[in-house]
Length: 187
Image (tube, rainbow, N blue to C red; front, side, top):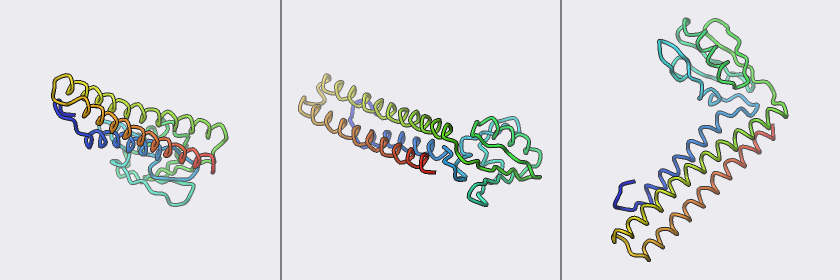
């Protein structure tokens, strides 16, 4: 946020970025169905650097409870296998030439509880990020009023707008979390 002027649109954009990050994190949580997004957090150590899995192979879902990774370079297959195992996704890779198959086991009640706990952690990180943007905005408003660049009434009106925006987006985070929790417990 640029010092010296208050931009509610910029604040909303930054808060929404936290919500988009939450959606990405939650899409990686396994709910018992195969999803290519499940492997998004996997980083593979190949060619002397860490790369996202989708840059060393293509990910597909040939059937509802199976993910297939077609590794482009045969030499990278062991590195991909290792990266998937180390990602703690609860998947057991089966190597078949250049293809790594990942059967999706049904969720146990214990695993569901772990996933719900993880979803809550991601949601809280998102809420904290939104509140941090709110705090920066409120600090800027105080500074602008103190420096005489904004009247007390403008400060009060803008503070209310910032708080309303924060409340609205926190509710959105809570709704996203509730939907994910229902999805985890449904399957």
